[in-house]
Image 1 (cartoon, rainbow, N blue to C red):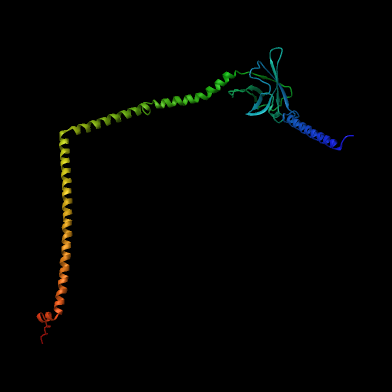
Image 2 (cartoon, one colour; image 1 turned 180 degrees about the horizontal axis):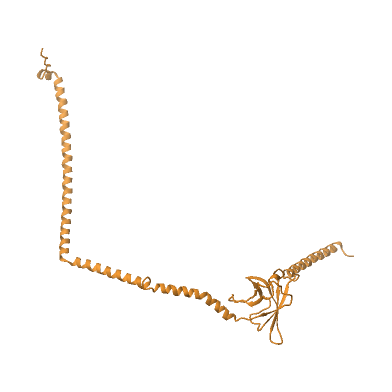
Length: 277
């Protein structure tokens, strides 16, 4: 007899397995749907002389956006390459009659197919319609694109070189101006040197030195005289202060003598003169 706990564990295992299978199925369904298996995609055939640069899964681009891919490639018995394009359902409106496909030469590494829509024809291509891929020389096309980008740059460099070598405004004119400036500077320096060698200039400079020395000595003597004068003035001020103090002290002594008995007897105060009648 089976134990109840064993039955419960078996049910849990079965439940987990069912959930895992459901998730796996859902993920597979989502992946298939993402690949556009259930969409009403447009399937076209194309032929090419060579399979070089072609591969299954390579993108089909329109104005830089992927609109489909190469779903199959095979070599036919006659040596032609036959492939199949898958264009996603929402881009079926781009597949008008007269449209073309060509290899992209815009990349340095890897290639893509590029869809060239016929803007003048609005009739849509039917399923299994056949296009012809005119295989391009990608190396030559890439070289041409590089040269197309280099030519303007080379032209600008040549124009710059012409401007630099312009004898009136370019580098030669600048060098001539610099040379003229150097020559003028050299003449000025030579003139100054010749004047410096002139004996009269040397005599004048000697007298200027002597005059400067005399002025310096006079200034020093004047400074000493001013210092001595300052000392004399300070001494005179001290003497005047002493005399003033002595006079003041003498006045006080005389007043004290007059107030004494002997002073009043020897030097009595004078009577005030009477006014005339």
